[in-house]
Image 1 (tube, rainbow, N blue to C red):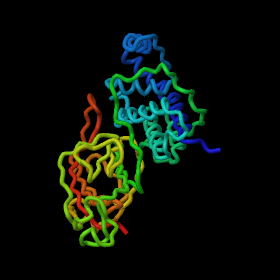
Image 2: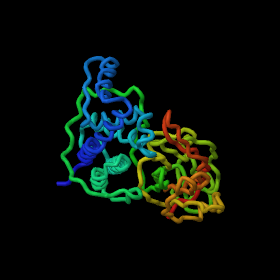
Image 3: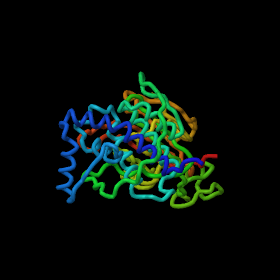
Length: 352
């Protein structure tokens, strides 16, 4: 019988415990001394009340250490290790509090396991990373020079203890569930930063012709009477953080946690596309160019070529978004990485 999504997440957390435990212990011992674990227990006992006990076999504790001891792990984990740990920590917290078999969707499970595999590779736990990638359902190439041995699968970890204390520092927003038909991930090789563009089922624009939306094209909602080619909005300097979605027609200035058209994901290494085109350097970028270019380009972009590039994204309802990537920002002392983008959206014909 195939393992359910929650069970697969549990197995992934066990791989975190097996692969990350020795790594965390070595780094913390070197930075804080051999009594670092007892120090954490004493500090949290005073902070939260009651005696606290921690184990290097607790995946959620290890992820908490990595995300809260940023000065220790910033150099030890190549980018985007800290952002990966934050994203996996959110999945681990959900695992520890939602026990229903349907708590995780297949898409959530695949993303979490891919993030686990990537973090384990960055920590040098290649056997566990290979097993996590197998659980995720894929086997992308490892970083240059990294071996890819396989490791045995273990049983799911026990239910996390109720005494696990809340985080005082927060973390990245909860990963949102994907909605819609497809997505594009643009991977930044080396930094392993990815854009995930989800083509979702909005219903406020569309139409099959270049005339108004009132006739025969299936358009309805607030843009039903708007002529195709009409600019719906233009926005500059949008800050898009990991786990947040940019919705082209619903308050684009404020990316949100759930549902949208463009997601910045610092974890996935998957490259997929649906009705998305990368504007070639020096190429025309505008409504007509985006409308006419329906090529789905499967391409990796490195850190030197990402700023200044533009994407044409066509939604299921015909809304066209021109997304221009302005800059990539790394703020290791605050919330980690994010990207700054400009957006122009038009009403266009619904794809056939």
